[in-house]
Length: 259
Image 1 (cartoon, rainbow, N blue to C red):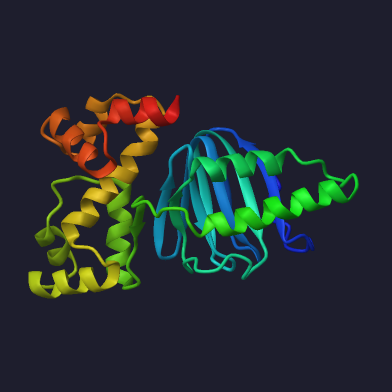
Image 2 (cartoon, rainbow, N blue to C red):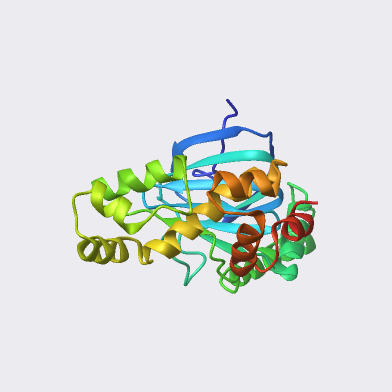
């Protein structure tokens, strides 16, 4: 397995790393001292922590705070840049993972910084590098949050059922299915689920289906096949839900983001 490097002992305030990952690559659970901004040029990256799952489409980013244990899956080939910041260098960022939009300005900054020589050739290069690093630190705080996460509850029994749902998700799963399996009445389950995840059960179920569908669609599976596996009565119903959530139907979304 590839040896991952997180520059925990590096004294630079911002470190940029370009990594291309093959399809199927996985990085075992780990954490690092630095805050990380991951930017995907192409491909899809899935990050899982004890409290949730995040799916990062191409041309998007993901904020990974220092100290948060996470594992990474690469379902299709991905080209990425990682920016590692000294803890505290970027203010006003969340203390949990978050998928973010990457502005054209931030993309340009990353590309410019990644092209800088390893060694500074005089004061002019040093000043330019310092200016780029400062701009990137400021721009990170302006990146918009994207709703591509799935919170997992801390409640042990509920968490176990949520994780099993992700293995075989279906849009037809009901509150009665979950509450009955956990030995709760509907009212108790509904309150517990909302308190533990911040979402209603139906909103969580839909988000789970989207996050499971995205890697399969990116790998080339037909919309019809994915829709049927998720329990939708027809592809049109799945497409309508997908468009409401991500702004465009599956094929248009994939053409815009994966080609």
